Structures are given as structure tokens and as C-alpha cells.
Amino acid sequence: MKKKYSYILPIIVLLVISIYQYFNREGACAQKVNHDFATSNIELPKLTSNRSQQIIHHLAYTVSYNPKWEIPNWVAYELTRGETYGDVPRKKKFSPDPLVKGYRVQHSDYSNSGYDRGHMAPAADMKWAEQAMRESFYMTNVCPQNQSLNRGDWNDLEELARDWARKYGSVYIACGPLVSEKYHTIGQNSRIALPNAFYKVFLRKTSTSWAAIGFVMPNQAGSRPLMTYMLSIDEVEQLSGIDFFYNLPDSIENSIEKDFRVRDWNL
Image 1 (cartoon, helix red, strand yellow):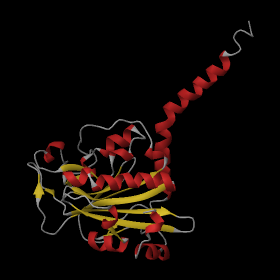
Image 2: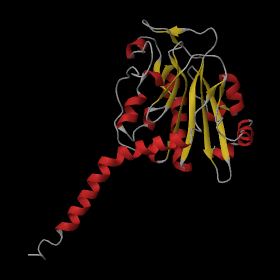
Image 3: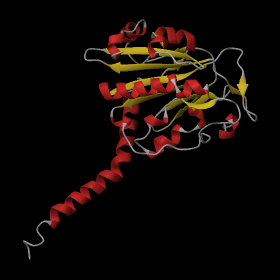
Image 4: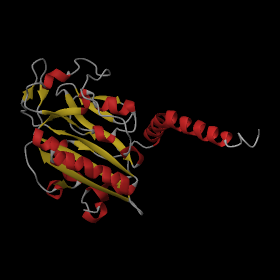
């Protein structure tokens, strides 16, 4: 009798391990993100210009929401190699951010505007957890974006960021809109600022120090090589009124932000 059923115990053990790993996968991701946030914060920028903001922390990203513009000043997060993989399905509809104080932008506020609801922290970076995916569709994480840009060059840059995360282990990302002093608006029930461009900056650890690079894309149709959008972090800071990666030691920050090296990013 013992010989007949001796194979059952290993199978049960393997089954229990598989079930445990499945149900704890999302929890492990959440713990990792919270731990990184508590000990690092390298990705978080700060405003150097006088403008409104409400800081909102979500599982996978942090947003500086501008209630006057009704879009973010910036969205920042770390993207790790493990977070580029996952099978959480993409949501189909955006929703108001429940943490916003005051008016909460609705999905319908963008309807018939001619502009996409352009993600800042992209949904494709959030497939590792249900909560991360759901929160990436909050209206605080989107801006009115030219359809061609959102589905073209901006999307290409998002895919490049995932390639970098897989290659280098992780990248720190901050992105957002560039809004002129006299800006146009969209929305029937709100006055959502229409950006004239978008920026995205990246930071990664190298074998000896750090490397950083920036991109600025006009909010218009276009299909250009990504290298044509590249700028130094200092240049993006001047355009945006934002101080990026200020939590780094000044000697490192000043060195990596004044210029960039294409070879550091395998471009």
C-alpha cells in the first residue's frame, strides 16, 4: 500500500507551493514597491516654479497633481525588470482619482475633444498587479495628448523604457506635460489644460555611478527617431520648472544632469 501511493506526497507538496506563489505574487510586488519608496525616493522631483500641487501616492507611482490645470505636474516611479512582466489585463475605461481634493476629472471630460487620454505612467508598465493597473487609469495620470503622438513616438519611448528596465535591472522615471502661460483648455464640465509638449526623464545605476537622459516631445503628430527628442536633464529642468533627481548627492546630480552620453543608454 505504501509503495502504491508513495508518489502522491511530492505532488501535493508541489501543488501547495504553486498555490502559495500564485496568491502571494501581487502582495510581494506591493511590498517591494513600498520598501523602495520608503528607502529611496530618488525618482521624486520637486517644483522650482510657483504652481499648485497635491501630492498623491499610489502603489506603483507618485503624482504631483495640479488642480488648476486638472492634469499632473509630474508623475514619477521606478520600473524594475520584474515589473515589465505580468498578465494583468488592461482596463478599458479611466476613472476619477478618489484621492483628489476638489473637483475630480471624469472620463467624459475628454469626450469629443479630439485628444487621447494619454498615460503618463503607462498601463503596460503595470501588468504586474491588479491595483497598479487600476490606479494607472486614474485621471490624475493622464493628459490631453495628440492621438498620433500617444500611439506613435510616445509609445515608442515607453517601450524603450521597458527595454532599459529589462537590460539594466531598473530605471527611475519622471514625466509630465509642458504647459505655456497662456494655454488652451478642453472639457465641457472642467477646464483641462492642453499641454504644448511632454517631457520624460530617466535615471539608472551604472557599474560605477549613475546615468541620466531626457526627452521632450511636442504635443503634435510626428514620426521621428527618438534620438531627435533627446535633451540633457538640465535642459528639461529649464523648460519644466522642475528639479529632477535632487535626492542624489549634489556632485553626482550636477555631473549627470549637465550632459548625457548616448552610449550609457545603448542608443
